[in-house]
Length: 590
Image (cartoon, rainbow, N blue to C red; front, side, top):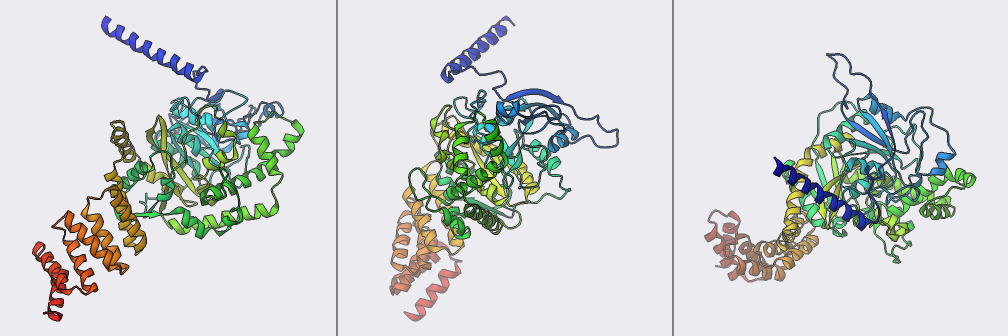
């Protein structure tokens, strides 16, 4: 017993030493609540109904709310001391907070938001920036920074935030928790300080997908319906290729889970850049904008630019009068954005509305009924605390480039943690079209355990120095080629097979598959060469003999073609194609 106590004190000592070391590295003390809370309070649920009535759906759960939700008798701070100083206590509680409390949950406090809930990094110039529990040297993400931290640090079961351009999804990604943004207009905004009416939504965080779903069922107030499986899962390959973290690892994990649970037939790979360029033509109205000093911009960056312009315009309409009257101390990001808002024209806003309408139609066409789009949540890892980059417009645009898809289409999105890379959380997001909220929450609950299992396997593989191998990447490229071939996109298939060959030139299948695509393109010389290479690598590859025979027949090498078809029959005597081809040629060229 004494030995166990000694060991316990040693462990505690090591833990404290670790905290001290981390504190020195961060150059600040980490608060007991990680700086998540502005104020502690307690809103208790009503008594349980007597049997045989069912208990309240959220019984036993605790939650926190961002400091933009009104609570009767309290001043809503909006992340700015001057706002608190110039406003009276609320005379009623926000509708969503009341709904959750009446649903059986206990509200335990209000959490930090960025200044006027406008930022995206999570930095707070008036209070201490909350500490990211998943990566203490990194920013927590905003605007609902404290709410994400409260869940990540296990202080509450779930929390509420607001999300216009990514205010829930970005901090969920940075802090490694689940984050849900519902379809625009599906959850009441009564008793919440607005930022941008046409983009604002109430979002929520959780660690457990069942809690995320239970909260959703209470807030969305949708009638019971049988759970539906997705019919269409679209993976935006080009978006994952842009990541600084291992995007292939994440998309591969999603692919494996979808194939296991729902079948390979519902998977589709899409170049989202090309799709948006064709389906959202009004993006070209902002094509002359520069990002990182370069004029050429991706469609998602242009979409993010339009989204931020719309938010600035609506924020100005809501709060410029108070800013001019109170002359508050503001975060420099807001000051610069307000300066830019004064230059926005009616034509600019009309363009933003056109983009939003086109974007909603584009997402509907892409996903149809019961479809899901798979994208990264953020393009980059969380910035380091105190990083100067977070003040720039380029950072604001890049950070929200992927979240602009749901924001500008009005759709719903869930961020799912997928482990770590270089000591930073990584995540993936699933998007459904407007109104698909319950379907999306149900689907994520079904997929979550398998997603976490795949994430854990990938993390262990990475830790042992066996991160995504060239062979695995080659297999992924081959599968994309197969998908393109199935869709009769022959040139695209050739490109993917070529990529697979570059990664692993010892696979007969890759050369044989490329030969098939060349045959469809009537590139018979290339098809013969690829088939011959496949046969060199695998003397028993029946398909390679058949494809080389077909290529040689079309090139006029009939004798050699007959030999290929006959050899295919030796390997596979029941192969009808080889038999018919050999007989046909033999009849014509005895």
